[in-house]
Length: 195
Image: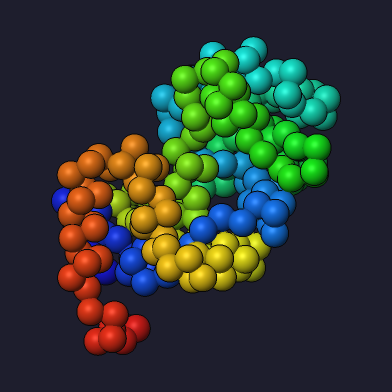
């Protein structure tokens, strides 16, 4: 683990390689899972306000879910998460002509229809943030759907923390990221044993 300010960071962020490969995974991380994307309280309010900007990109099923229960709910861990369609798709998913699942919020952002790129939990994925009483845990969520991203990252030699530079700075700030980068550059990968 690496400690920076009030965060404890898994060594996976500097030891593992990663680079999203949407042509391989088809954006399945926005479909599979047991709940919607985690939201911060202020993000929930932002998403409600930007809903008109993305509404026409959403599927009729997603629109029906939003009309019935809203854009999000409290999950079994008492976190706010996005609503999901039929136990799968986040309500904010849309599909490109090639069948790749994408984020309607991010699409609207790149088309200039909103200034909010997407929830920070989505931007950070596969990194997951868990808040505890005395610290914030920064971990890598590993599962089979991201295996292609790990292979591509290894081919390109891009550590996970570098691939996620922008969202990590968005979440923790430039100074925090520079501290992580310094730790990564001085870390001896050959002298590491898992405990």
